[in-house]
Image (cartoon, rainbow, N blue to C red; front, top):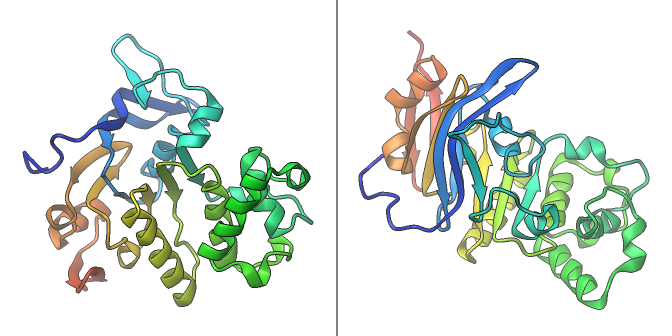
Length: 270
């Protein structure tokens, strides 16, 4: 990382000597990093490297091992109320789609973001302000034509947009996304990319995992590489995203090129 590339920014997340064990197996080891307001960060790494576990530290669904010299602070607090956290950070994780029970309409799913559940009960309790927020999200995420359909009947792209709309009901300042572009067709990928870049341009900060270089958002200004549970590199896209570094990360020869604002990666046949 360049000496001045991330200086003079205010941190919203701070990790010091963080270690995570699951079933007595080390998943993350010696994580020392700060995430700053103004950073829009992509996390890259091989399958099983600990990327999703790293993201789950933010919503407190996974806790690190406590030690005398370790700390995890969100918005300068080691202990933060879960409702306060939901108002500051919106989340999208891969398993959320399976947690939505059968019969829940898309409108009810978005409304459930206010209650933190995945059912339709909160819709009848909405205030006029909350209804207006939902209407704006339906418009912004192009969900009008399907808003009364059952969530589980929708395409992958429609589900993804709906869950992100749900994550935005409290107008958080941070959005944490685990593989938001997974299994999307070209149109859905384009719509999601456009909308996320729009959010960034309106001062929302995004931290996300992707396996596709082509899906790296054009507004991304920070790249973190994770391998075998450790952060091995951290810096600006033009410093990190190149053939040598990514070939070492994924242990395969890759030719990385940039076309306009988008990255491409091609395997090299040795």
